[in-house]
Length: 310
Image (cartoon, rainbow, N blue to C red; front, top):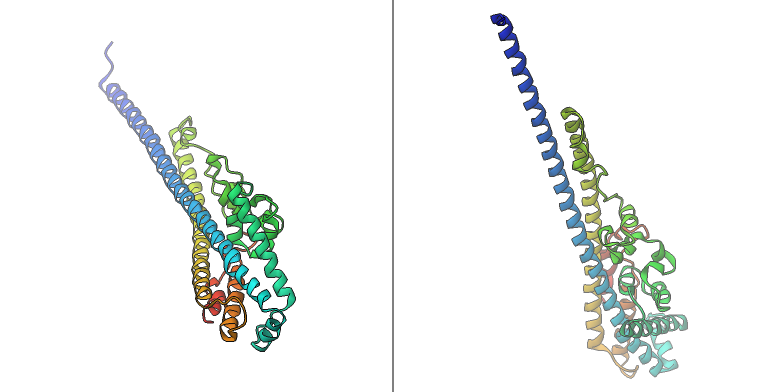
């Protein structure tokens, strides 16, 4: 028997509602997928920028290490020999000039030169690796003393051994099997790994509303991760800026040293000026550009600007 007209209407209404719900569910799944894909893309982009800056900062540290090493094996070495050439008279003349060069100062410089030559030979022979970035990051004496034994940055004694940022810079990202990524992120103040739930995970949700909720939660987690990655990149940029600032100061001071250098104290005025510049060169090189927690040392330009005014 044919259905009454009112029942046909009800059936059509129910069918229409089902279609609407089905369309709504598909739309929620599509939205969830779009949200997830967009969040993944932002996270990947942020990680790529961080990795690019990591490579740049490590290169800046290594360049600074090379400049320091060159200053120790050239200008500082020349200064030590010039003082020795001048004999006992040099000590009295330096005291008159208020340079206060003590026997301890001279011995310290000699030790730096000796360790520098050892590192230089080690690098040339391939027996020492990864020390230039550490030398760039920290003051000369402690790092050189440890590095001259032939150990890598990650196993240097003292503050360098516990600095995850430095280990990460030289070790690479987790994607390439680098050891120090997680530790470096902690040192920089942010976890850079993305949320554990992948887009495919919430797409398997039994309900469209559940998938959309999970996608929005995922998006929020990614926002937090991206913000931390950006903060980490800012720290690396500051470290690079410090390295560049010190490198420029060392190059300029070494240039001035070479312009006035004399092999003994036969020209007292030139000898004094050379000693002042030599002490300035050593003092600049001894200034750490990175703190023990992996962050950039503050006010580097202010700390070293006085030496350039000599």
